[in-house]
Image (cartoon, rainbow, N blue to C red; front, side):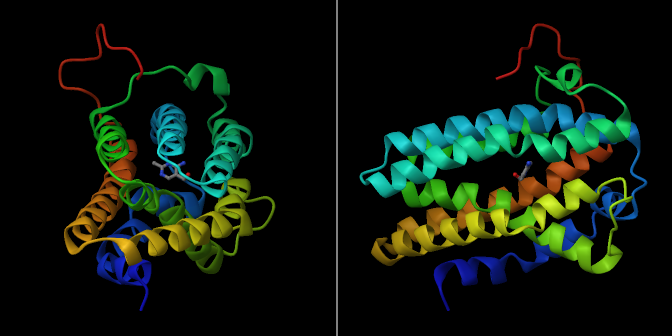
Length: 230
Ligand SMILES: Cc1ncc(CO)c(N)n1
């Protein structure tokens, strides 16, 4: 079994909890509360900005053109393609995308971003891959589970969202990250592999927490006064 197959198996509990989270099932049924979707898009827009910055840090730690090209392509993909699912959600709630941009991150999303930043600034490329991987991997599987369970047609309110994540583009990204992480793990000490395992599991935990944050419209206990987006 490869290192990433082991990671997937060890984190089956969290993947299952994500598939059954009420927000995710609400996307599948097409009836999730609009306030929750609004909260999600606000946080996710800033989350994806942070994700691109992490790709840039990873690029600065790359030794090969192939790694540099990979991160460059991924920034382009996030910038130009991942706006598609967000636009789908904006249409559902009837709010312009612009209005949902530039908001400070709620505590959970802030934590998730800083967790990835920690590994990006202090860790090896392998550790960064491990922290990033649950992002496409959980969404790819959510997309596939929802396709299978709800068999959405073009008139489903989240057809574009579900088909985007169930698609070959996200599958290819997940496979590339897996291959690169597996190659890093081959060279890594046991201590380094444990850091990768920890980074991966915490990102899975935080993926689940991100859905809960959106569902409950989580905010900072004393408001956001004076706080700006990262
Ligand atoms: C929090 C989060 N995880 C994963 C993805 C998929 O890119 C996303 N858009 N947001």
